[in-house]
Figure 1 (tube, rainbow, N blue to C red):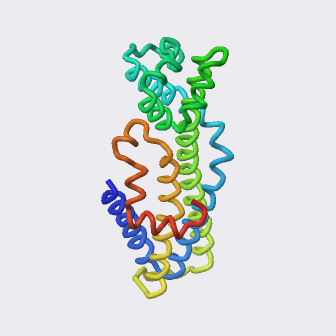
Figure 2 (figure 1 turned 180 degrees about the vertical axis):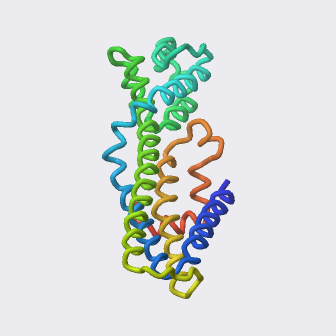
Figure 3 (figure 1 turned 30 degrees about the vertical axis):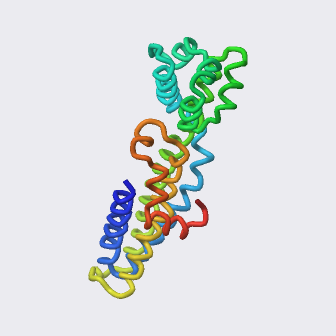
Length: 236
């Protein structure tokens, strides 16, 4: 999987470099500015994601409840609360402590927190909310980051291109120059280190579902290019 991450990042950088370097220096600089602004705009995502998290909470809760139901060998019902209501998590933890801890941590929840929730009033609802919150927050933040990035990118490109066309009436030739090539490489690195890597990093604490199948956290840790780009970005 780490090889696929390296290939994806290399492909992303290559596509961005190819798209930017073939422009003249001024237009290449516009694209670098747009990508940098889009990456900066993603910093707003944590402030907007709490409003979007409830849209992801129910599916994540159902997935977590289904995992615990399989562990307890009980049926999966219509909702997470109903499924968890049929499971005694305290007893399950006593019988299978390692698998219980692993399943809870897959969703970014400590076993101690989950056991504490199981002892409280209205335990099934509390358990479901606790299990769904970390991953649904990460999904919401990733979606908000992607939307903000695209909106800012398109907006800055539109504004700067309009200003550029107003200043330059004659159509400039589009060819690769030393300046546009350097700007293209910088743009590719910014796109990979400040857009792709932060999006990838949001899911590293989780091993639920396909993330566990792909061994996402370990794959990112073994990816040479990922670690290099992560080092380039002090914000992750």
